[in-house]
Length: 499
Image (tube, rainbow, N blue to C red; front, side, top):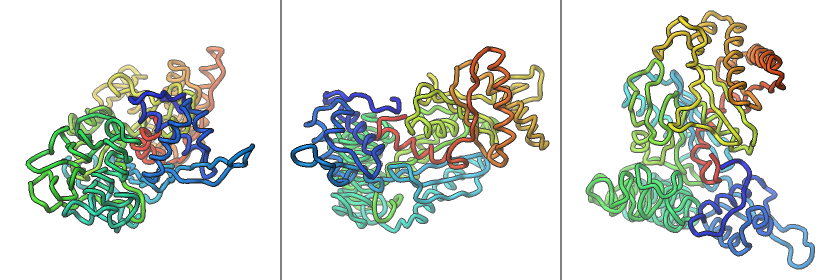
């Protein structure tokens, strides 16, 4: 789905999509808000449908009144706005030697952030333990003193409203044992299950399915309760729980994974296990978006043979981290996460994000959408061979752009590194007819000017030979936070019918 809010359709199967369109328009309108009549006009929905959707969004705490508009006759229309703090998402960037975590609200605004050393070469369990610890420390930094997942550190059937209060089972915990709050086991708050609230576990308005992947019975999705919780859904199946106990494996039903009651996944007892605390004072956690080096499978959440780290090949990182955190997790390449930041900002142009850090890769936005390819493996930009019989690369080939570029960086030759990056960028522009090139990654950001100048010069030369207009080259917005904030948007994007 591209950045523009297209016309919605009045079919029950598309109610979640229509609600997401409305949410997106509320987000784009900012504090001034937008009236229901304007929402109907921009989505193509009937005023009655818009009224039903906005009523649900208000009940779930996602929307609020923003004052009255000037009247053109009759009763002045009331504007509605998004409530950014109603929900939160976590972004996690796992680099080869560093971990960055950020907590953002629905508008994508950072609330808290952490950076720590990270060893991507460590054993998987050790790496996952480190990532889990940083997520919990991030929430502590944000003032996470509220409930653990599913009511105050488990037990019973959850408190209606939870320790941090909110709409029935809202921010911070409660409902009937929801993961981070929620009416009837909803993992992120809401009226009756589902990731962002909703009747039967729907993504936004509770019509069908879960919130990260609507309606998918799988690792973070449940039968009657949406992603990672609710109703009778389970974390690993759509049935009655992961193991012996009760109504929901990851969270939900009457007591979830961290909420105890009748739905504890590890036993049939009534004592819940401590889970992941939500941000204090408001906004349940929607989930965690993880950006990692590729190649990987975005759909299954499995890492492939990361260059230099073959031990990760086949590791189910998404599911492993979701089990530790008791939260929905989405995995994507670091470059795609940064590209998603461009797509969710509403761009309709085609752009390439080139990331030069501990490795070299590309994220592609084509026609306003992130392009991942049929096997979600697009963007392995650093492994195009540009020098036959060149130096060996960690991927097993010779003469790869990444190997040559990183060698130039290692010897302190920024001019040659920029030239090599420019050769690859010019190839990409010619191949895909890109409108814009954006540069990022710690190497570029440490000294952007020679890289911007060098890449732009190579693209301009190549464009002149082909009698094509050149394309602009800039440093990516958000700089060093582009990847980690994009990772958080992996969780937010489906709520707004983006990504």
